[in-house]
Image (tube, rainbow, N blue to C red; front, top):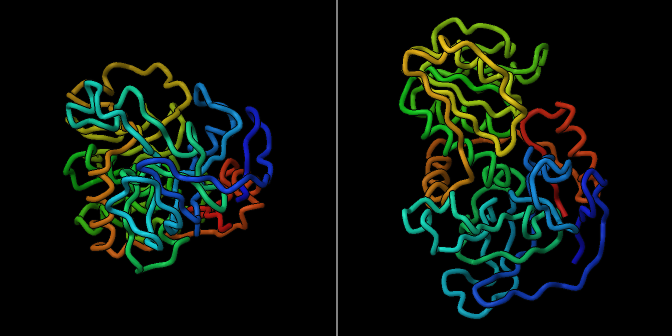
Length: 327
């Protein structure tokens, strides 16, 4: 096998060849067809997340086919197309697992962060955390659903049932969740970097009622807002945009510090909440909703060896939609 390996914080990924891995009990080996490039991969490469076990292969929006089975795997078969998400293992024993909140597990493993991920030709995955995908659709088009879509879905659920929804940061996750929200009959208000006409045009083409810069005021009060951009300064802006009783959902795993803000923009029972990881139930529910809504992802495909370029373009805000690597 070969993969793009991160050897140290901030180092460029390097293409390396390794012996083909063998799956252990309860595991499968997957031949990767495509792997999305997520902003969380940037946080891994840049060392924003703690306790990264170098060397590590990033990537957690994986679509591929099972090409080896470990012992005691019952629900997957050779050749089956599956998706591998960010959450790659939970202990099943801690308070959170026993309370049906496995996304908050005390001893989790994460694909592309604490176990090798999908910026590779092959990876090993826990069979319990693989989603069967069927045969409809292209691997590269499906890959962003495995995190951008999943986290967007969990964020949308946590935002509540309000009709006027603000989306701050209209990239991979934003353009997917906007389609789901529109299918639910909601109105979308898209906030982008100042002057990012391409992202604003994408939002409008997907049915957004309005698109503007993050500092702009929307034409109506929002029932809720989801922040996908890892920028803490957006939290006060979003609070000013939502109505009394509204909710601001911080969807990223990492965000810059939230600046001080006056209490009056929180008062009125507004809420600020975060989203942590996902559950397998999120995956099942979202993939069904995505199929029903006929989600179409907007992707730019890169060769695996060009992963550093894809990450750089994501960091600089030069991508429309999502980036995807093909081995």
